[in-house]
Length: 463
View 1 (tube, rainbow, N blue to C red):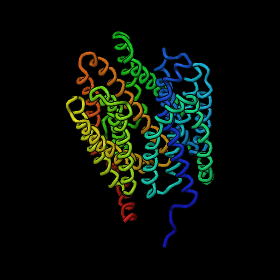
View 2 (view 1 turned 90 degrees about the horizontal axis):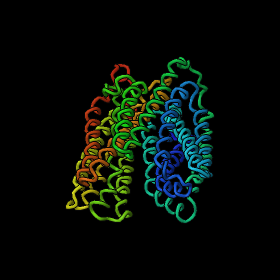
View 3 (view 1 turned 135 degrees about the vertical axis):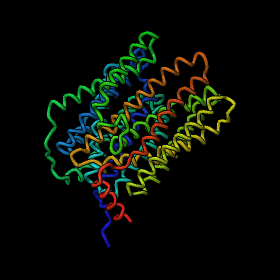
């Protein structure tokens, strides 16, 4: 009988990774709840959108830097640096005496989170065998469920009854214990000293990342501007993104080319379609069906719970063929869920239809999300894991940002004329992204005979 692959160090590593992901998720979700209170206290409502736009830009830059860095020297230093910046940024934000200081703290925190989100993928690839990775990435996916359920009410309670500053300080107090749990595994990683990319190529990628971040910020703030500035910002943002994004992802990603490019493109479309729907559901229930905020928010809980169930199912499948089937099935379910949810834009539709639709949609992204990560890391050479993980997360963040920005512009333009048309427009954009994801997901198979032979070996070993 062979020994269990779940050694004590691997279990500690899993707990540490999940705890860090929970903290990153909590800060993203909870901060949105506490930020209005913080902005009012710091007299910063006039620059409220900047608190979200600037950290988004710094996160994109951090992810682009972290990939080649982790490939060159391994994930250890990148993770430790990321945790240090994450904690430092949270402490600065929690202690902020002005809106500028709060933005600086949030930006430093986002740099740390960007470093860790990429480097942890590399750590998992080096510390865990391929047969365990589906369970690891399933756990990471499920780590967003608890913050989705408890983050907003906890942040609301702290902001109302204690202080909004504790939303940041809680995360800072728990990040160091998470790092301690990762240290034993990181100490046992082999020293990695690989040939680094030419400096010219690195500079070009950083310039492209900066341009993409600026384009994303321009699109994000365009929705709140008068017509002429909004048009200028939107066109300028789109131009920057069109020019820069192809330089941040593997060749063929924009076309959804077979193999790794299609994995990155599918994940980007999956995440954008889900979030592009998720943000509208509670608003649709309150405006179109007269529900209270708490009752309407239950739809997000339903989606989070079904996401967790879908991720659990995905984690029990270990072959690459299974992961591809799960990704395709999940995208189909997500498309069905969004399409049914569209009917709730009309007040005559029973509200329970929306809950049922998002039960299906949440389960769909749960089935598809972590398998795409498993496929990417399995297809990445050891010296490309960081770069490919960076491309995966950068593409998802930028695609989601673009879809949300375009959706916000269209939604804002239609709302004065028809609430039904406004909600329909937002969900139609998400449906188009999901449908495109379904098409691209049929190109997930590897393109080389050597990779196909390796997958056949893994499948045989699992059986």
